[in-house]
Length: 219
Image 1 (cartoon, rainbow, N blue to C red):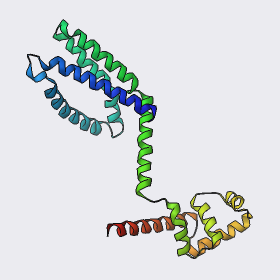
Image 2 (cartoon, rainbow, N blue to C red; image 1 turned 180 degrees about the horizontal axis):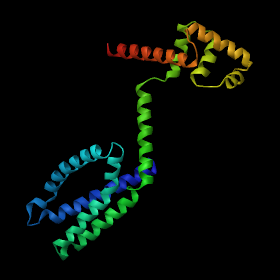
Image 3 (cartoon, helix red, strand yellow; image 1 turned 120 degrees about the vertical axis):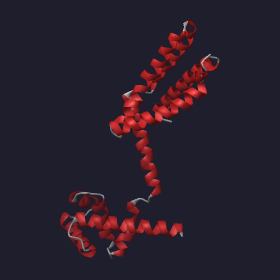
Image 4 (cartoon, rainbow, N blue to C red; image 1 turned 90 degrees about the vertical axis):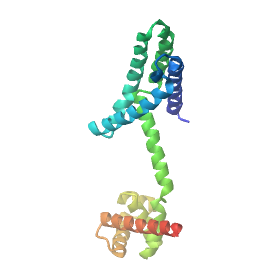
């Protein structure tokens, strides 16, 4: 796993330790509503309400990030309040604060947030790529459907990839004038007025092919 995920695991483990420490500390308390399970249930409801409020009052990106950065302060403040319960809470508070400071230094930083966001985006792209076939796989069927020659199909691939005419000519070992002739024929056969219209035509073909495949699998 990436190092950022190792740090996240370590940070969450320390927070789990801090909560378990608090649960053990309050399990025998004379105040029954301060025991661990009750606190966890109430805190979950409060956290859900705070999360919804943060998203609506701030925005979808900044809201969760503000909560993310405020967790160490809120958690640490809770342990500091525990000092008011008497001298016996000193050890519990000390261990809890140590766990929180260590965890926040591991996880609750801009660098860690960026790393985790990158991992999440990469995973989303991988899942999207696995869910839908690569569009480049549709080039050959698209070329066959419009009667393109082998050389025109090679030029079409460069057009779909957004390559320049110079790059296309050098890659296929042909003159730029020849490449332009092939492009002109591709536009004629696909009934396109230019590159953008060709791309739109190709996108529509991919969507139709993808839809037919999905429909076939469902049947």
